Length: 372
Image (cartoon, rainbow, N blue to C red; front, side, top):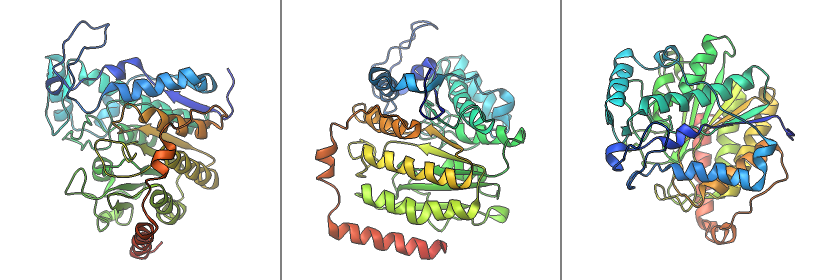
């Protein structure tokens, strides 16, 4: 196997089998076949499956260290989630599925699949921290950044990144972790879990008042020992390529430089893309590639290139694959590309110069507010 950079790609077929259960009219057909659904669940497996397929078709998979990882253990989960929640989730999963939170339904075996998803995040993080890989991408599904310790929501059933982080801290593989969340929705779960901690910096760029509608304010900075270690960057609807790169350059990177993490983890949602059905932003595949490059440069400067990306949202079956391919091409340093078929259309529809100036003023205001 050849690899331009030592880049891992963690995936598991079972993650594609997660179903929305009561949202999607799941038809169980046996434990060795992906469940058949009648649609209706926005978190379709096709966005992730088509990303993996595109990597295979272009040949980029062959330049990655593609592998799976063991599921997260009960001990891993219990560092983040109370036993009462885990037992309730497991019991309902064993008896056909259901919903115990908000917009986070699951079908039969949903608990085991969620453990597999969290295990991919843990495997990616451990492989980078232990020096087996330079960087890594975990194609986790179901996602995790909305999951509170005892309340799943927003398609998220277990806090994948938090579970991986707590496991790494418990093994003394790291002592300072930075989480950068560029999913279009606020990373309220990661925020809540680490809100009173100074060993984990949480940063969320998100469309303001999208989901959840009552979290993600810039004024929410953390409490106690964690005060100042949570950074919310709410962005106005319609913000595009330039706004995201400006926010990363002027807000995210200075915050990371001040914190000096051992490793950077990106909650990598692609739902800020212009064609996503669950947002009103104007990012492109090139936006995600350039943000990945910014994180790679920052990881090189601060933490010996240690960078992990964990898949979160993104709901356009036709566009997520290209966004993901751009990210993994950049992450691995490969010359294998998958040209964005919507590039010229989306570039022509980016915010006007007038809106861009307004966006720059917003970033300047946040720079002053955060004292960066």
